[in-house]
Length: 426
Image (cartoon, rainbow, N blue to C red; front, side, top):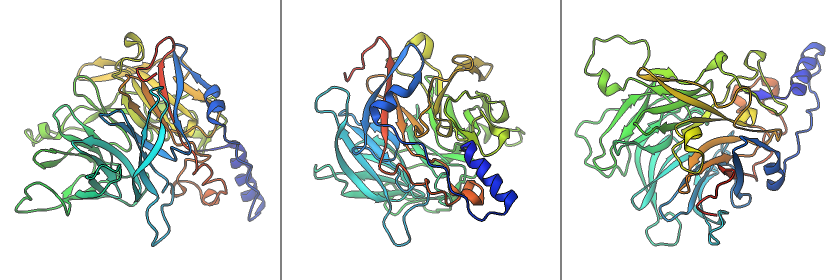
């Protein structure tokens, strides 16, 4: 987690002098979408394009393209503190279209609103699987008006203690099962009220402490699996699963729980490998004026999220295919590592030495997630906020900083393609 150096000096001054309150430094001013686009420093073989922005997109945290090409956006306006007691949730799902077929999306229609900390979705049959408020829901529109009118609770019991540590990233795996990242806080999972499959005769809570979750959308069979990821889940072409957490930009799940069950007496120290350097071994090269709340974490990952193994065709196959990309919103950048198979797992090196794949001096740029588009491009989900730190994780003197909610009316989606290429939607 990061705050600006001037803020840290003010806090130190207050502690040394006994001053009860200190004027907070003025937050950097937000940039318009065109100005923000001009501020990006990107890999020289790529270019970045604006796909959507406010008011059509507010606080985006996850996107997914529907079979008809429409862009579905999960908006996370509950962040960081959630709705006031007794009030409806602030999260919603919006559907954007591209009627001009020029690669720019708008005409937003609200599919669902009043959700609490919604943070992920994937399309399935005639609806979407949604992670929200410790549940896995299935939501659909049955009358064709674009608005959800049927919500089914498929699973419940995921942890809800912290907004940033909740189940997320429903993802269809190579085995045609749907994978859910744990969020780090676990839970005791039970079939939901509208569980559409044959309910087991004996239902006991399934602990996913230290593990992720998987279910078969055809049979309803569900289980805990090796993990666990905080916010991000991705597969490569060979079915290898990758997750991430604050200090770990790219963890490869090497040993699956179903395999370990067949060897109950086998003792293993851990089931994953750090495919990318983690913690104090990680190195970042931000160009914005941000500092960590601890000097020990300067220029290291502190909020890694949205890990994605690139499998598209809009960037150079030889250079980018199979690379890992991870967001670091507190440093205003997207990091890239080149993965190299090493034995049963992977090692990696940065895509370019001492320079990030995507960076900016714009302190409001908050990349929180990545996605593939139907055009093969890499899409960047930009929450665009002045502050991206949760009050629970910052010192007491910073919990009520006045700029905490600046940007709740903003959000951007960006597309990255080859510099000399053309996106399929253009």
